[in-house]
Amino acid sequence: MRRLLVALALLAFLLGCSSQSATSDFTPADINFAEMMIPHHEQAILMSELALANSEDSEVRNLAQAILDAQSPEIEQMKSWPGVNPSLHSGHMMDGMLSDSEIEALRQAMGRSFDLLFLEGMIKHHEGAIVMAEDVVDSENSEVRDLAKAIISAQESEIAQMLTMVAQRK
Image (spheres, helix red, strand yellow):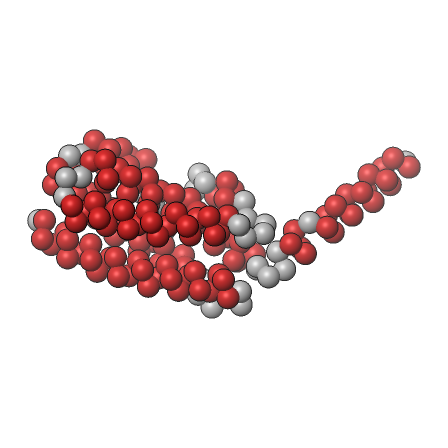
């Protein structure tokens, strides 16, 4: 019985020292946003790496590099937030994410077919990220709010660019 009481007291102490104080500036919605956006961004990076390797179109390659350059630091920023565990959502399909079969089709495509699959897939992907960011755009945490606004702004601009690129390549 004494061991049980000691164990319970230790557990209560450890729980009291953990996430609540560490995440007081980040709401559960903020943490959930980061945990879902990290794997979402990681898929955009994978897609962009495929574009850098497989596309011969300099405009597509430049866009892919810009996506890599923007989203890699955003991933690191979100991973640094207290209480964030990106592996919790790594297997889930978030808004706009491509399925395994869509990623495989992208891997197999070449030439103009690749470019169109990449652009159309990334438009869908960015639209999903915007939906996710809109959920926290009014967060009380300025870092979360600023990142959400930056994601929305950048990805809306890239969607407009990609829509033009698709129209030019069809």
